[in-house]
Image 1: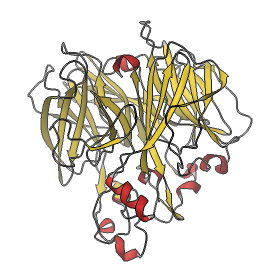
Image 2: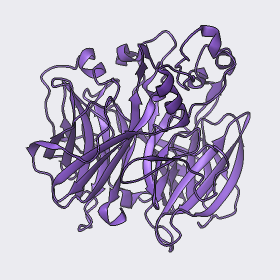
Image 3: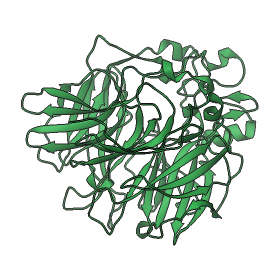
Image 4: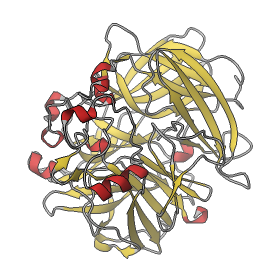
Length: 499
């Protein structure tokens, strides 16, 4: 394979500036309802009918006190509805209990997982172990509920049209009070006869960690109901953000990481800052059989994984006795230490994310590792109809430079078989968030559709919504947002037929 043969590229004239990149970090000051977005360039495809939902931190500062890490910011949902070439925009903070309390007081009353401290004296943080459910990581629609997700607590239920918060959801009784619920559910496109499912998990961590794997009906009269579940326990502290699925397996990569709770207990660090890679131990693949698959009711498989730290997976699939898992690997757990300012981080000092494929032989339990792209990337996805199956293409956000870490400034479509790729770049003064690939329903071609991406224009100091052709990343449309929104996390697309 000749890796990364360039097909198309927009060439920048210079490198980014720290000021342009960090200027996106701000508080969202206004909530809009059904505002029509201004078309700046191109034309919105009229075949796009549905809503692009997005979640991310919207409150980063209170009376001069900043969160230590943007991942500690309060969740704000954005919806962008596409109808006949017109896009309307709404945004609303998730009215969590903590958000309402802090809005009223004007200061931070809770510690953040990534190092944010309560306002006031240092000692006020010691031994305060309350977790603030900030509902800021992902947003998905299941039945009549829009769910704002944060993996250390239960989802918040929202109205899909108004974005008003209904409160914490137990998913029709499936969850106990404030039970941890993954921010990375995956929608099985129909590997079983009973059509689409939402597959997700919750984890209880400790010296021995327990994963609760859950599958919910995603279509039909039982939409939103729990179909099946199982619980499995594993040795070691589990730090799991994402997982992957195939028709037969739910695949977790347990990073070789240690958790030292002492600085957290003493109020010196957030819980996530107490994580540290352990290079003397091996990471593990935890393979949990899905209940309706060929290995239903059998015990999980535990197999040594390659060194490195993984937040996100691209995809997984099966072929004969082999299981393939595509993931973004870092050399170490990237963290912002207590004395660092996240707006001034040096990207050269942080490990880059490298897309790799692992081939796991289920008979010999051997693992072969292959690098699919050496360019720093994040937020990768395949066509959602190919989830759990062998996919030819992946779409992802990348740094502009070819090696080393850097801010995300480009979108790449990568041929996962031969390494050829297309890119769309807005360097040096533009920055991208997670791209969302939407397949064209009228086509059977895997790469026919569109890519939606919310961008930050450092030159104009504004956010823009960009529509690209998924096949070659050619530009389709750019629309201006009415407010400034910080870099976000994850989002989802809901077709108009499902609204």
